[in-house]
Image 1 (cartoon, rainbow, N blue to C red):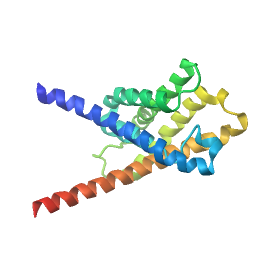
Image 2 (cartoon, one colour):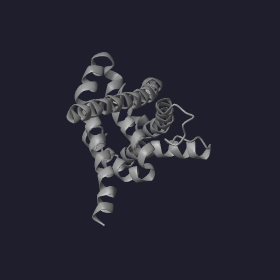
Image 3 (cartoon, rainbow, N blue to C red):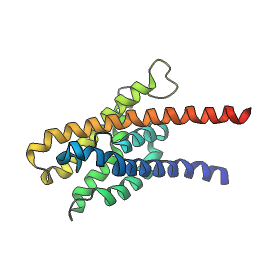
Length: 195
């Protein structure tokens, strides 16, 4: 019983902590750098948005079990960093689209019978995950534009949409690279410990 409880709680906690850590990295490192070059876009979107990579990986690995942890983490971070004005409904549209965009994209892959699981050895998983992140980003972008479009000057709409898609896709790629480096470091430490 205790093992089953641990097995159901640990992935959720990992998702929440990973998502929040990615958000803080974006807020404290990426956003200040980006604001030097693109100040008008930076207040709405990041060019390397790591949390999107976390939601793509979490959804890929845990499917519907990732939805609640992603929603909780995204709501907390969105409230802290991005909440615009007093319009709760618009802000919640942005939160929901960000939280569920990867799951919606996964349903499209499932519907078209494109198997992204590790069991499918005929695909390059890292390329497929970046493409998965790109498709999920389209849904995230549409939701954010629906939620925030009226608060953004119309001449910034196209640039902002492109920034959302590029940022989410690069965020997915960056998360995959970080995960690969972390796994290599872990294997290195394991080998050193064995000697």
